[in-house]
Length: 194
Ligand SMILES: C[S@@+](CC[C@H](N)C(=O)[O-])C[C@H]1O[C@@H](n2cnc3c(N)ncnc32)[C@H](O)[C@@H]1O
Image (cartoon, rainbow, N blue to C red):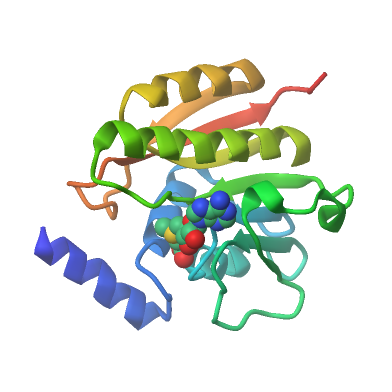
């Protein structure tokens, strides 16, 4: 296990990523072709910024990139990248105006307690907010990527995603630590919202 951590950690340093998480997004992108030049993408829970670094290489300069996190993102991005330091639940809808995104990414993770039922519920609560955000800000046909914790609330989340997306996939990247309960839930093809 240690070996895998070391590999991704070293590789992140070598490639200039601020965190090894970049490889999770890269794996999902390779498998599902998520990111393309010219897309409009928002990354919820973006600090310290490795997903933004990866996404910037794929969608800019024709596309746009926005990040939101409770914490400050300390690394530098091109001026066109908008980063808001905010709780997603407090994010002023007005600052996004009528923005519509092709892709909503969320790697948001709650503070964990070590009690699986509490942590998976906290993860579910964050994902409910991300799903509601996606329903307001994704273009019809757009894609949502959520990091979830395995456990009972994941079934509820899957049912809710199935109601508003054409299809759903689950993915556990190789770069995700095998002992981690995290799994990614992808909703493809947002259905028109009434
Ligand atoms: C695993 S990190 C994200 C790593 C990021 N994808 C990267 O590659 O650098 C999870 C982030 O979710 C953020 N987060 C948790 N709850 C949040 C909330 N309610 N609103 C905004 N960000 C939140 C945390 O502050 C933390 O930085």
